[in-house]
Amino acid sequence: MKAAPYVRNPLDIRTTMRCVLAASVPCVLTALHNTGYQANLAFEKGGTPTGWRTGVLEALGLGHSIASPLDCMVLGALFFVPILLAALLAGGASELSFARARGRRPDHAALPVIVVLFSLSLPATLPLWQAALGCAIGVIIGKEIFGGFGRNFVNPVVAGLAFLYFAYPGALTGDNVWVAAPGYVAPTPLGIASQSGLDGLSAAGLDWPSIALGWVPGAMGDTSALACLLGLMVLIYTGVASWRIVVGGCLGLLGGV
Image 1: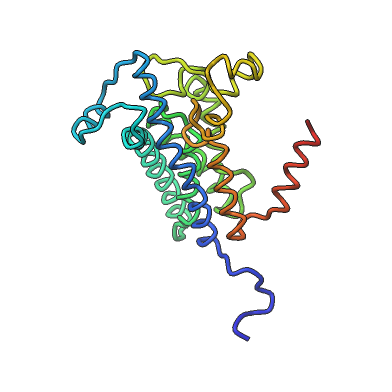
Image 2 (image 1 turned 90 degrees about the horizontal axis):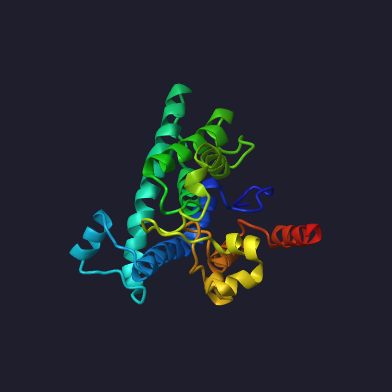
């Protein structure tokens, strides 16, 4: 026999984490495009683009046109990548510190997934120091103090977001944080629907195709239902997620409504 009879799946932790990263690609691409699109849309409505990101765009020969996917993608990357790097450095430093204190090698297998999912869940306007602090707290509280990956009882991403939500609620709530344009106010579709019902979405100029594609204000990586479904299909195809659990969870939600 080439393998032990009790081995039913060759997926290990690192392979599983790579599959999750691959599944996050549609949401990352949506985050890049929509973050830049929403900012450029605000600028076309009267906002004034300023700051180092505008200088980078001009140096690259780009502008602030909503009709140019490249303009939107590059501007979105100038918001998303710094937050991603700040979270990565803080999370990596937290893991390394705990590993040295406990005399073991650091295990960074899950760190990229934690950092990417955490960054996708943030608004583009969040200060970099808050992104770093939130990720560090998420890694420490949600992973390291319980002994590392597999021993934690709470998801590190959820722990980091919960910390930021209660410590700095103004940075993650309200209508002023979802579009990366100074002084621009734009509620999310969920915020509009909670206040005015579904009819309020039409009154705000939002249609269902735009909502499904994710061309609406919101956290950088969670606006597109289509991108999330594509990621889910990747997880089911690779065997990381089970369609039975997904269907059971959906039925459970419908039963509770």
